Image (tube, rainbow, N blue to C red; front, side, top):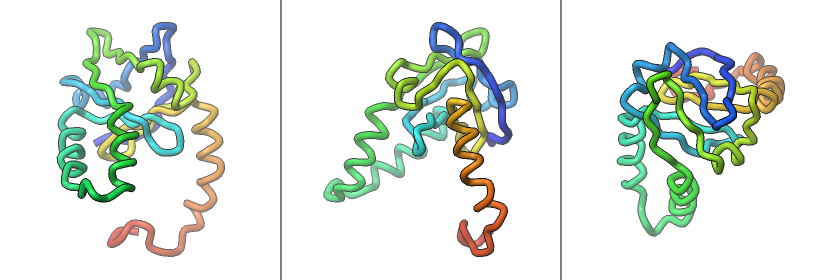
Amino acid sequence: MFLGTYAPKLDDKGRVILPAKFRAELENGVVLARGQERCLYVFSTREFEELADKMRQAPVTGKQARDYMRLFLSGATSEVPDSQNRVTIPAALRAYAGLGKELTVIGVGNRAEIWDTQAWETYYAEQESAFADTTEEVIPGLF
């Protein structure tokens, strides 16, 4: 499970060192994909395969499902961490998420997300108040 917030740097070759707490889950491979709000999703290969299996069950006749799958899967890339636990983020994904040198990596349960630090701080500032003031169920059966 991915939890917490980390502040790694993007090196000149577009690589990021994975947070130590995520390494065991990601050592056999990661899949990077476009995420909502212009971040990148980071899945373990196993988790991504489970997600892809669910996506394959979507009806081909559903335009919204087709559109989503095209954008999501066409930008996804499979990577294997190197001996120093670095993963290369392809240029197209770096551009999509507007990544600079300063990154914020957050754990979101079944995935991690990579954000440009300034974008994360802006998002967090906009969302924190609504989070603190939530008075109705947001996640069915939990909160």
